[in-house]
Image 1 (cartoon, rainbow over the protein chains, first blue to last red):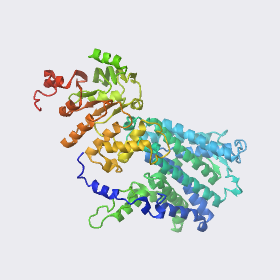
Image 2 (image 1 turned 60 degrees about the vertical axis):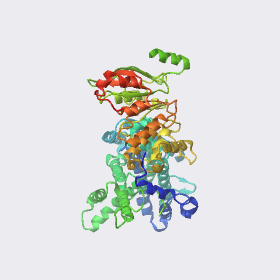
Image 3 (image 1 turned 90 degrees about the vertical axis):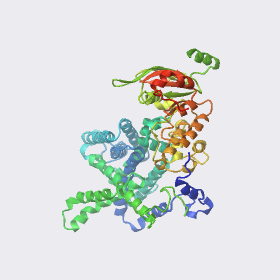
Image 4 (image 1 turned 120 degrees about the horizontal axis):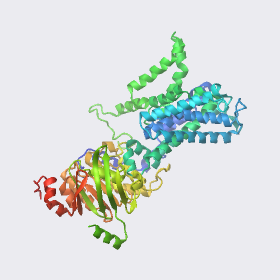
Length: 371
Length: 263
């Protein structure tokens, strides 16, 4: 209706003249941005330069925490559901691997082979997460946070007080990654690649699902649940399904977590751990699946080196939590959308025309190739 | 009138598009709707008129299931849907637009329409992305063209102009195979040109699609509707053909303030 005079038509004209596929460069043929190949290559060849400590204690840990935070980002970023139970769901998978597989606690562990124990553990974690979701989706906003936090806290006290199944306070130790295909997956190098592969897969799934009918519907539910119902969608079912998918991701991460630590205890799923996952996701940024991984890397680096930095400055080492807090405060202070937001702002500033101050390219996120 | 409807029913063998029996809705002590009984034939175009607070939008909300009625039954194409959630009613061919656009502002125009098409088809939970030749994507694209939004197809809805959002609102209601559409003040806030185009869109709808339209602009309402229902204080006040309603002295007194001389 009489819109020809709006400025959008000009951008649109340029977009219509977008070069056809034949004019694309070779690296654009797959439709995957070049930055993916660069980051992928760096991560794949990382073991050439990095030590075993860096591989397992920094990077593998970052991938694992990143996956758990990714499951939260999926719920919060696409579904507007902030769940504090994601660490608990990962913990359920970790406990199930310990209980179903082998560990030092013979009286509890069933000794199933890993290829049975792991899928069953992930399945149980997914079911647990789906049930949590079914309870949580009846509420919104702060109440979702409270319900999921309550479930997490209840689970924490259950595993701490129950000795017959969860071995109580001391938890279950010597839960090791298996040896198969002639590889000891416990060693830093194979374990690094295992975590990298799982994290990349989880990331890919989230990126892919975002544009699938289910992902679009989830974002529709986030933007406007009432309208979604008026379009024929069962909003509650969609929200619960989102929890199921997020729980599967968190469950896989939980299996890797128990293998990384070699043990699982109530401390793994304590409330402060659940809050750390929220901090990681928020600091990284909830707008894009890469955010949780950036947040996790920052968290792990701070966790690992804050103590050394303080000691080298002649300060008391036990104040390392303070340094971590300050680091996060700085990120959130400068950008409400975490590290991702800072990155985006820098890029937008570069694109801006120095004379007019207007953006020189069209809408962000269209990936236009017009000049 | 009930007899003509009944005879028509037995002649064609099809149920009424919409049948309300004694529908009421209370908000606390306030009766927003009282004993609404009305019948709309398939393919009929009905205007609902009435001053602010007459209960028009509440009526729509009860029909779609956004609110449960406090009493009475609602039948949609012969089926009692009174206890159905909104999405079940939508899947049976009911559609609606909202007075204040309820759109997915974070998504593109095409994604909005695609969602609307997906909502009334299978595969709502599909994790597989639509391919280029996906028939639903095709019909979404056609619908975007039909409401003249082709040039902003890939734009985020938050960036659209008001008039464009109203057009998109209509596109969402026409997705899939609608049989009966509720339009809640589609012309509000539109310019005269946009208004004319809206009338063209409404009168150009396929004959089998009936609709009910809330409209303050008598001009629009009387031009697109075959029958008119006047509401007042949550009750049906008058029902009849457009010219009957227009010429009714009581209606003129109440709704047009006696000063009606626009034509």
